[in-house]
Length: 385
Image (tube, helix red, strand yellow):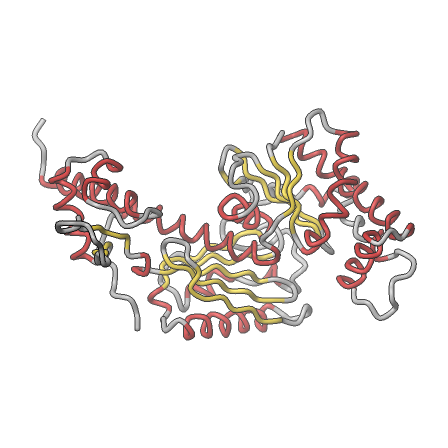
């Protein structure tokens, strides 16, 4: 069969992509090193990498001072600032935006409070302001962003809507995809916050060594995100992991044990009340210890159901209460032992409340990778200055 010009062009493009993957995530590399990683001949790689430099995907690493005799081999690095992605966490109390280059290096982070009772228009207006400010601080414009992922509370359908349930007031009527598409020409994705946190833990958190993960968002509300065989599981309608909707699981009322603990200062806000109870339990207070035990008992019902169904390697305890994992994980482990055939590892998240935005960054980077594979390499625009 004759080979057409289109076939040769596509083969060259795929070979260029293989060099891009060989460059990304690696230190500056020689042509010989790139040839070994990409499985191509050295002469072919030499031509391809020069083209990538010309097109703006790679750059030459200038050799530093060296006492070695002779001219050092030229090294190339992936130009991570060829494009950027945005991860945004739209929470009940805050908007958090994280700007990243194409290697996942954080370029900018901005957090702003938002009123818990803010209607969708006000909340989206605050999202706009945060985006403007984080891009402005980095000297960038919306055209410099190649993908945006926004995390929200509640199950998200394929259209990016939270039509089933969400604690964000009026958000079931919001259309964040359409709102963001008015300013960004790049792909925009909306995803559930628990799912994004699970992605973040596997990417840059405590579950990097695991392919089967249950992320437990523990706070004034309780939720779960699931990764199986290394893949985020959304379910048919985006509601995978929403086991807390089943009242018999007791996730809806589990935090009440902390809020009703005797001795809590009358002026404490809900989140402060839980922190007070955890600290009192840490100090040996009997009533606080009892409240934590009751909380973990109710928490364990839903966790055990997920563990028995999915048999994960790791359960990550995250969310606002993860700061008190030292007083929660051991009683939770004891409760799970009563219910589970096999106890997975329990690990406390170290990402704090940035996990949703970081997971959003990771999904945005995945979107860029997917577009590169399907659409091929066109020369990126020069970095905005």
